Length: 362
Image (cartoon, rainbow, N blue to C red):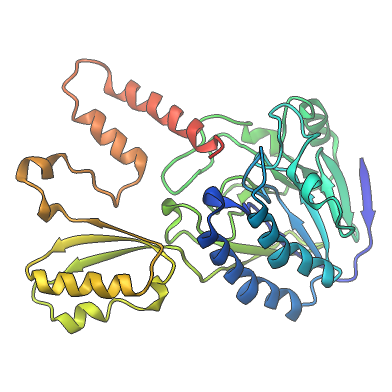
């Protein structure tokens, strides 16, 4: 399939993995998403007179059903505002928006957004030309569209591919790589491959994962999030970072510190956020109580306290360090096992299972 468009504005916005309805349709996350669209995304759209947006997949979080509150909120914060501005949205399907695993015929974007005249949905590999720049769109590859997708990747003359791809060896987060997926060499002919699917922003060679617009899991903390712009006719992407965060770690240490110093660490950025308090030294119980009281007065979404000082010496030796990622914790557990088996092999199997679990539906 080939589609040609002559555009008014050569600058396009590219966004991926919006996951409306994330975290079990949490209203807290819907509020967090809306702050991004209200304060960052649409002010940029209006200021730069953007007329087109390319969505690289996983617009919604759930494959099997819709929460009506999540859909109503996503319409008001995003889709209706695009329509009001007459912005064209090119929306690819991702693995979170296809109902079946082996076909894209039933999908969330079509069923929920098919009434919007400004949205064009892509469920199979398609060549699209913006002005004079040919792009190959490759949405989520499944059993039904695999042969066509591979043929288009092989035969297209496009220099840029945009898609929702699972490529072996790329970073799921800052410490874990995909153990399965397409081989990167399949895409060596392209000057640029820009993909959704993995929420961590990364680049290796000609392949870039653009990441999600906001933090969704604790692993995302301090990992840059946002959206990109691309000027047709060029190979250059520009990243626009989302300054808003959802996850924080606070290190508490009242050794040789005043109560005033400790309390000044708490401010309104923690409102509605998920927080881990890592206790390093807790000499003064009154200081700690005042600190936690002020923190809760900020109305955070959730607070977890990691306090080794409350444990016995034996329990402390068994305590999991919550500041480490899941895979590191599992590997340390294996290292401490008193077994004769090949621990490296066990850790490799755990890594494969963990990678597969990362790709499963929540």
